[in-house]
Image (cartoon, rainbow, N blue to C red; front, side, top):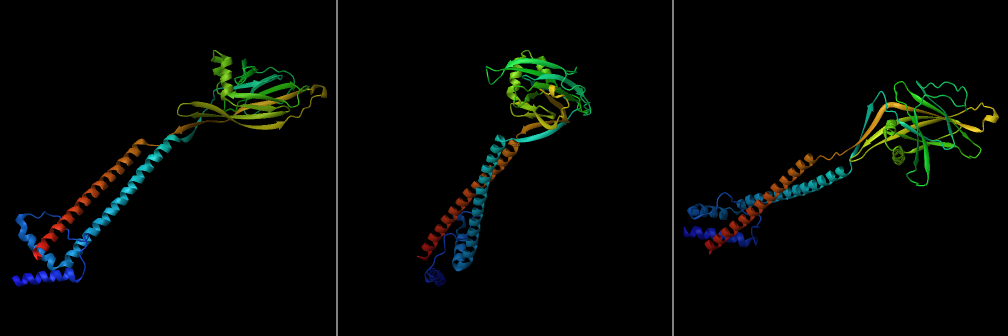
Length: 352
């Protein structure tokens, strides 16, 4: 028995010293099932003899387990990095969508529009007639350049220009068309003396509701606000300007606004009056709704806080599990290292 032990020890020493190498720390036998205690010394001694007798088998088994664990840890580190990047990207996208809402455009079809207000700034010009017609039919002019009885509702307002305290404006406000299905239109005829003018044009402004002006307590202040919020356009003399209006309502986070968009076409007027009557230049303008649709534009925030919170919860859960796995892996490797050192010390003591 003593001879067998000496031969076994000699063969182990020859394997360790003759090859000039030692088993790497990473590739050691993995025994995680139970801690060695005094009640299992016999089993441990038998295991030690097995490792000593078959070193290559223990080397392969421990090496594969430790290499696999290392690769698995690297994979978890890569997943952790990806999860952290996903969390950062999710928060960045949420903030960008929150600060940059998208525009949602819908069209609401109506049979009648609220009558718009058509504010004319005539200056030295004179309104000759204002008439309602239907189905785009405008009858021939009977006496162009002469005043005619009209059927429009008008209101005169004098106020101070909002951007100049020294300028007084006089506006003639006409009630706009309402019946869009029957193509209701308003035809206005105006004249202006050309003796002092190089270029002739009349400015006008559109605002959403004529009734707002009628019901306003301070009409001058109301017109000032309209001039601040609405655009000015012009039409020229010697032509018939056909204005087709469309209404756009915009709803933002805090402010709601209404604006007009228009398409205009110009046709030259064939003036057949005598030369003596042509000193007054004639203006013709037609106002009509373009189509029965109101364009409504709304700001919509596409950022969904609940979706973002769910993604972040999943990301942080993955980070927590990865951190827990890394912690357990480090403890496991330290435990394997301690067992290896303890076994090595026992073997060295046994050999000695």
